[in-house]
Length: 534
Image (cartoon, rainbow, N blue to C red; front, side, top):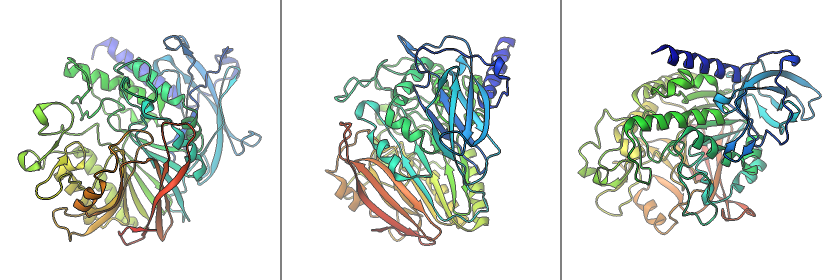
């Protein structure tokens, strides 16, 4: 590494730390601009909660002719945490630096909070005050907990519809939201009949920043972020459709870029993701500058919610082996007959990457020792095998777990080896609701159920409709319910004795005036991996 690169990396390390830590500057040392318009146009958010800490997020953004126009100077942002929304009973306060190198974002990592407690927070920059957010800490790991209400959602394509599902989710009285990927889409969206995003294809750091600003400008999304903490993971569209690890995906347009250019694009996308999400600075294993050289952005993790639940967030994109047997050798994904693909069952291929697989196996071993509660795995897509071909023969999609059968067997073998209590898998990606049993061996209909799965629909992203849903359910009997039409989210309420899952759907995503209803609901008893419809 040459001296300029080393200097830049050290500088970005310092900036990441300054955006996350309390600076404790005297008020006279603050940079205190006077604003002619609201700099908190992207709202506030919180996430990464533990029993005594949480991350508070905002980004200063003043829309201009070419996106944000805050200049090249850092801005000191003051934050406050209180017991009440009027901030009369203060808990903590501090300052963080919103630097232009990180798009004037702030990630305040607030520690020393009381466990299992709701708080209110806000930011101030100069004479501007942000909206008020509400967040919470989780219970201590050894605490006896009565319930957890967790929302799960994914796939919010701006051009496919309006984000009114988030408005209805605010009324669900959730403890946390688990977002399972495709927060933005990188497309130009010119074929949309609803609305068209500005900026064309998303390729550069500035492009990604502008696309996040477009999405985060949505009032319903902002309000849901401000309602409770979010647990975040990503999928492909935060970078590029169907990318896999260090290999580019399918852009949908003629892209002559070299592999090195894709890595630069991925680095820009990862930096923009960090800038816009309530996640900890520790996810940047070599700071922002390291992303350009292929450094890991470690987002997989486990969070504990008392004795009631262990929550795992996985990363099924960053370490993924490329898809195999694509039609015509194209990048991206394909549907295919696995019998005609020699690489299909290659045991060396992994969806999560072997280090993450080993980490997850170790975490399952620890959970076995706890021997209580629910083990909730949030990951990007459908785990259960889904054969699209009715009758003899098989047709699978190679981008999901079906395309990594050996890796899926290692995953289910780990569940069985450690007799993991109450495994529950949450997923997204497919824009459809699929509810079913996770099997030890999908080739054997009598195989044991090793867990249950609720793969959710999209917030807005389109799907193919229900014309073939009934026959696909019949072809894949380990699933008990599917719907490929309606859009919305899921809510899971965990108690020591059972979980209740409710699939909530809006009537129409192309209108801002939507109603919400329950599509279906299910119960699973603790200690019995069997889904019952209620």
